[in-house]
Length: 229
Image (cartoon, rainbow, N blue to C red):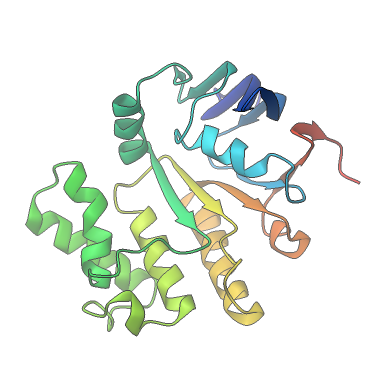
């Protein structure tokens, strides 16, 4: 892997929030490389900085100082509009709370990211149907989120994350709102995306049982990378 260029690289990244007159550092000089085709878990207790780290990797926020590279491009000082473009093309998101649009069907939710990228409607619809079939929901195309179970909603979210064929999938506590059995099913699906399709996956979790699905774990504590305990 040392001969490869990392798909994601954080170099001495700090994130400091100003709370009135007090500076609160959420990240304290994190350096991290993720290579193409890796499945990496970012672990840590509440308040460790793992969600902030995920926001950095996902172009949802910029660091106070330090550099972030995505496919070799320094994204640490880009404008919000430029970050949004990169997010749409290169990153797929899976959230703990699913974040599906309640007024849209499963099919329409998956078509939405492609709409923002200017994909023609017939292509959007074709790919969205294929993705729903691939996650076992070919018979739920026209169901809205409230008509689906939690596990089904997360499957729709996984399909949506793949809509624009992103370079990286970011999963933020993907089993956090699911029962144990459904959580295992979702993690098996993510493992298959990694092993069969070679997707690069970065997952935030506090659960060691979930982290076991990843091939490598990075442990955070008080905003720093620390050795596993």
